Amino acid sequence: MFGYIRVDKNELLVREYEAYKSVYCGLCKRMGREYSFLSRFLLSYDCTFYAVFLMALKRSCEGFHGGRCRFNPLKKCTYCACGDDALSKAAAVNVTLAYYKLIDDISDSGFLKRAALKAVKPFLSRFRKKAARRFPYIDKLAEKMLNSQLKAEKNPDCNLDMAAEPTAEFLAALLECEGSGNLSRVYRQTGYGLGRFIYLIDAADDLEKDIKKGNFNPFIPYGENRLEIMKNNLSSALSMTFDAYNLLDITDFKGVLDNVILRGLPTVQSEILKKYEVKNEESV
Amino acid sequence: MKNPYEVLGVSPSASESEIKAAYRALAKKYHPDKYTDSPLADVAEEKMKEINEAYDEIMNSKKSGSSYSSAGSYGTASSEYYQVRVLIQQNRLDEAERILDSETGPDHKAEWYFLRGMCYFRRGWMQQAAQYFQRANQMEPNNMEYRQALENMTRRQSYGYGGYDMNGSQGECGTCDICTSLMCLNCLCSCCR
Image 1 (spheres, rainbow over the protein chains, first blue to last red):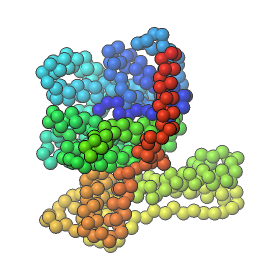
Image 2 (image 1 turned 30 degrees about the vertical axis):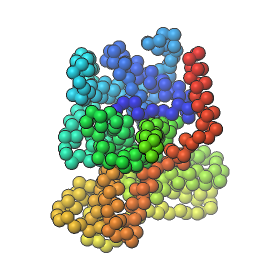
Image 3 (image 1 turned 90 degrees about the vertical axis):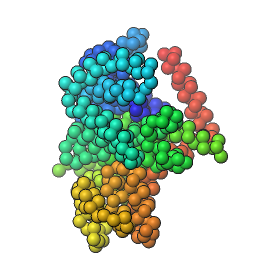
Image 4 (image 1 turned 90 degrees about the horizontal axis):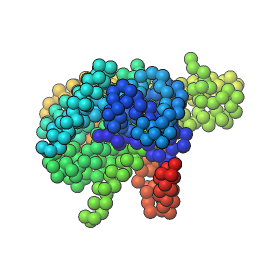
């Protein structure tokens, strides 16, 4: 479930794109410093969004530095300077989720792939332990998400909302603790909608694969109505996110965040649902 | 209290029409209708109150006292589920659900389905909520409250928020071709850099 929270680059101003890029590069650098060079390969756009969101909420971005990319020394890039632990948190979330995703993949895959994945596990496990020492609550939340996901999928009465709950709850709890009072409720709601969207879009994306392999997928029971159910639930999850997000007073990175929520996510949604729309037309 | 000019996001030297425009834009953003049934309705209402007060204050200080009042009340008709309604209103969903679920028997009233759906809605369980609202509407198609909840739900399901239409803009128009070629051009440019 990585890579669904993206910006719609075509709609960003150049300076907004550069600010976004600098958080991406800043996060990459931070992961290299706090974990290891190898952990940089785990970097995801989703956690970049998380970092941008945190820095926007706390107004902790203190400027940008020039530098060079570690992977391509010819390329110049800018790194954002973060005044609090937003980048560290995003790095911790990134390696922690990568670890739990690996665990999930190991249990899902066949013999050969499993052996390959198991070879990677010690590295990720070390990163995760380090992250858990730094931010114990992140690890706890992620572990809870994995366990309740497994439990939900084993339940024969599992419906779509139950299946989406663990991921939604993870992001809700992750954001909720960043504020207090009403603000924390707004953060929570933003996270819930976003988490629900991520889970459902991932499920929609994997539907064909899951049908073939006989894996669990919340959209399977809906048969012919699938496309409509997908659309309805994805859109309503986004509306929930947007309504909550709208109540926040954001000044820094506003262009980037607006772009992700108003443009990026709907684009991802229509891109993924398109493959089912084409199918429907062919069958008619 | 916050600086009223900051609340509206205008400079203290702004003209009356600028202030009005800023106020209208914000009032639209936080309008209670947008947050019907939402668990964050009270937060939106607070924001609305804040901008109303700010607007009033600025306008009073400019000596043209026009006052706006915030709307948005949740119609609580007398019903046997009064307590459940209050609990839902206060976002105490676990308690509300416990009361609803303690009622046994397969033949529930329409209101039961409506309120159960509202609990799901507030939790963000949109699929379940839609099913329960539909059920309530089938049982009592003439009830305005149930119909509104279902309509609100349907609106969300086809949410083209911010005036952005997710499906419509992707027709086979000429502008899309322009976009695609620009995108390709952009890729080429980043290669050369």
